Length: 239
Ligand code: CTP
Ligand code: CA
Image (cartoon, rainbow, N blue to C red; front, side, top):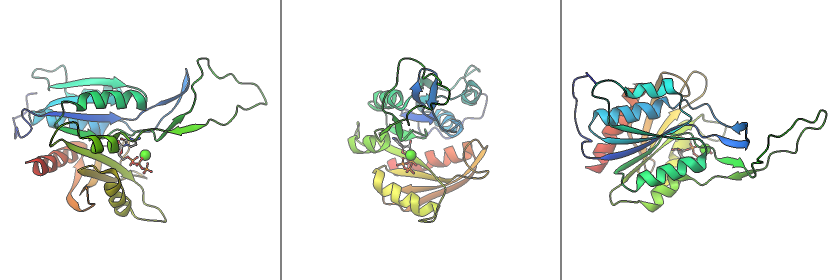
């Protein structure tokens, strides 16, 4: 959109990016959610489109102001189709459908690990002095691991993201390595989150691991800089 054309190294490819954070309904008016803004996923979509890809952005609860980062509506608008979703089940459906024709799938969305077992049709009412029963949770399917297992098309590249904090058991990179080996994805983009890092912030610092947990790239800067570093790595592993 008015910017000088850079490398068109994703021309002719269909890429799918999930962004934002899923919301799991508790009742018709309440949900369990997370703080993901969708900015990194939107930056990935915009960067891929600028490099010539046809992009499907599966956007889980991403605010319109964030989606404006796609540059849609301007002359020469990017080739991005946005599929809005709410829950993890909806995100899984949309990603699996789009993945059938995708050369690359990037799971940048923050997906709820668990959802309430039952969702009543009516709002849970307050009974003064009688708090409701605890909400029972059941596990959601791991979409990324499923995509990595299934490989809908030959040579399809599957990329995950991992926000890690590090804890008493292991540091950020060690957690990332374990996760890379567990998920079966081709690439895992690991970023440190916590005070002033990652969620909701304008910039990022990431390490890209391969499926064996080896470091293949590092990047720091704006979410667009990180996005382009991810696409550089995808192009490298798929050429
Ligand atoms: N992911 C997914 N489906 C899920 C949970 C996560 O596809 N049900 C994807 C995310 O989109 C991300 C990657 O898996 O690309 C890593 O997510 P993360 O939450 O870091 O991994 P988990 O395996 O859920 O581990 P934990 O939350 O315990 O750190
Ligand atoms: Ca998780």
